[in-house]
Length: 224
Image (tube, rainbow, N blue to C red; front, side, top):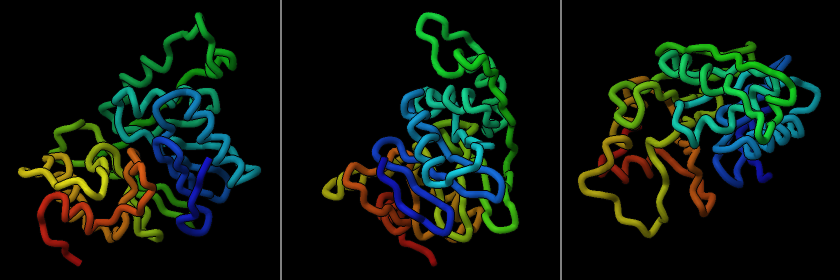
């Protein structure tokens, strides 16, 4: 699986839906596990390869839509705690608890039950070295329980479905997508210093996506 080192102990995993693995002192935190159990298992395996000898303690789920939650059964099999906005908690607990008996997956085989923890408007994960801030997007029409992750040391925002990159030859829509407008407004509201944005729907050309690109896509001048 292709990977990029974003900083000391922080890795971007690509080759499909993007994920980010962070090396905390005694565990690994993963942001997103993709759209299927095979993708989730592959993400977890790659995270453990890059950060050996530590368990996966947390998996962050941005929101409950099926293409962002179907990889969570891999997290259940791992025994990891799933962090999601509190409005998604009951739904994920129910769906991830359903038996998979016709074609047993790893969670079914291991007899594991989901551990889901609800997050409010903000949650900070830190070990004194690494910091991951989780923020709920306000006034975000795509999903009311949408979380973004901000890594202040690496100066990146990790987001899903607010901005899904198009080819560089594409013309920005007029009017712009309300989801992208809301994402940019929330980043400004939260005063997040993030020149780089990592979309979970990673661009097909694997380019680095910047805040300048988002501002261009909503026809708004950048602020620094």
